[in-house]
Length: 203
Image 1 (cartoon, helix red, strand yellow):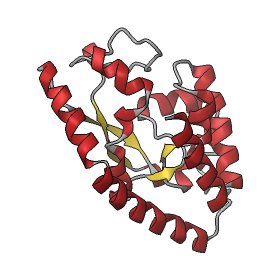
Image 2 (cartoon, rainbow, N blue to C red; image 1 turned 90 degrees about the vertical axis):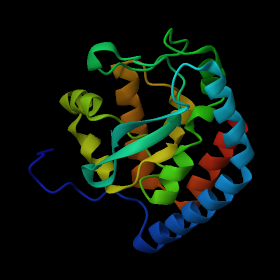
Image 3 (spheres, rainbow, N blue to C red; image 1 turned 180 degrees about the vertical axis):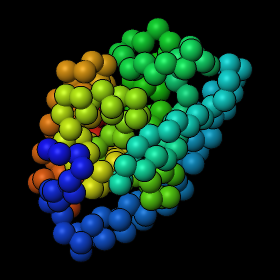
């Protein structure tokens, strides 16, 4: 695909469905922020007890339209985990993980602050996982169709996340891309609901 041409619209949802999806995201985010606020507080306090850095960190990711935004997570790694500023892929049993960070990562509780991203409109509950530009550039060298994902909001969870796990290799990143493109082409509101139920079951 020529990157200079207008990307082909492959979104399986129509405008009405996207509106319903956004309304559901906002309602869901508000309710979850209220219901989970005690959990947020407990995790925050436990993080601060370690005295090893901030409880929440943000990182620039690329979202809809190829625009950057700040994604929020509970910190799971040591401070300055990427020495020299060179981005590194996260891995299972990553030695940079703190003891409590391992607990958070095991159940994906570190992703909870992204509910705020959903409320802000940076993300949806279901969609492709947003990536850093550094790795997007590497993916684009293998498959330029990555830019088709920019037609939709990135998500807190996805079918690729459930089935493919953490992407600690380029092979996994390309496999995730194929799954994300398939999702975008065939996504429906009912399909999103099933992905959310699968995610809750895994948690």
